[in-house]
Length: 375
Image (tube, rainbow, N blue to C red; front, top):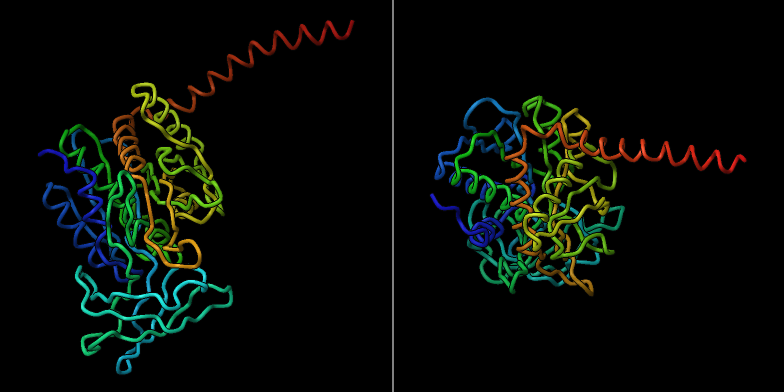
């Protein structure tokens, strides 16, 4: 089968309503995506989803992981037309007051009610903890655990810019699905797993459980996939995918980072239009920290995210943004990683050989220079 255009996969995935613990719509889409392509699909006891491609002789698995949730308000209580809302995720409490909302039941794409935030509550760190809202019209169908999502564009394209309510991390999930889609179309030998985790926005829970319970193959090469804030010049939107070296808490495997960087260089050598970046991206934490701390060979990749967690300019909620070209580059990098898994171990020694040449040359020149100075 022909691969699905990336734009179509992005539109489908980022349009699904989701929140921490309420990722059912995304999980169902991933299941149907896998079944349509003959891919193995399973869920662990904690609701994390796994989509697996395997063909040919046994090969070290490449695991690409993204989370299925996005920060959101969730209905905690209903009193007439008044709603008590809990916020799951992280955004400053200066956001939210007066913002319109659309209410969804878990797994349903169409809203069944609308509301407006009338007041917000902050936690001890000044982040949004919850809110009060008033339903616009009949509140009879509103119930606890409904998703109360910001009423911003669900998904639209402005040239290469994707504006969507939930790019983080549904755009990352779309990139993994697009990678699997292209691999299925070519049917090469190999072993790649798409891992889609839950409740990242409330503490990296799904990834931490998967890592701690050793639910991934012991020899897996793991890549945490994110959309990461480009604020403060951390990265350039449109500058290509980012080989992420670490986050606000941790740095990841040098072998993985070197492999990914070398492959980015190879792709750029083959296509001068291909761009990629190599950055720390320390604006937040990522699931790579969980995998790395529990002993998996772990790297990370991301694309630059605008309006992180829907925090737009001048204190207003806005759609998040990503660059479609950055996501296309990310998919190309992942496909190349899948192709080169058998050669993974060669990339760091190749760098060492380069420095060995420098060391041998430097040994001669520096010794000769030191002798002249001694005279």
